[in-house]
Image 1 (cartoon, rainbow, N blue to C red):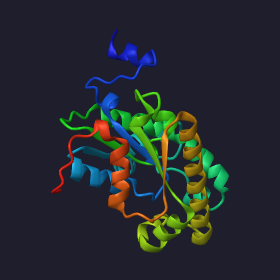
Image 2: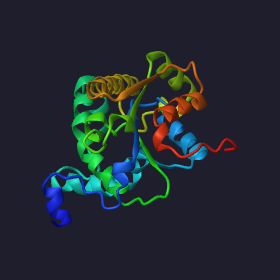
Image 3: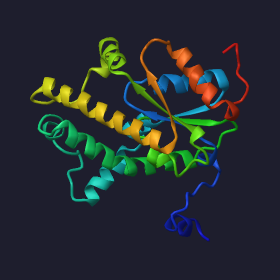
Image 4: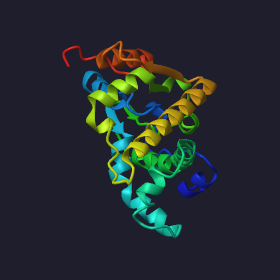
Length: 231
């Protein structure tokens, strides 16, 4: 069977076994996923893949090419159309519908990785329903979501969490829509994870990032190398 035949047959093409051995952190925005992955990389010597970074930068050419192929503007829809005029429910539905396409791009990135260490992939687009067919056990994934209180804390303490990065006619409405959308998307991740037997970690701010990272490390325990206590 050729590589193309395998993909056509619906099999997960994984030439270096990277996907099969990867660990996954999905969930909601601003739950500390990237921080936890970085801490695990430093402490356990694992290789971290940051979905959001690649999705916003490395995948932009693929996003533009797809828009053009569909006859859409290369620059994407007008920001007001996306952030001001739509409802949070419509925005969440559109976001969820787009995740499978973006996940395929992330899988391409991960397939190309060859590492002597475990790989931890993190990001909100790594959805439980998309990751589940790739992994051999639900224990290879956790879903991290912020509680409402911790989300408010992040908005106060992290300027980038409160910024929209788009010029719109009604910034207050756009931001309110975005926050409501993020909540709906996170709630969907929790429901799906629980249905699939994937662990959900609710981050409420009562523990610092190091403690949360250790909780995740304990979950992934058998798949991680010995901890470097001096890191």
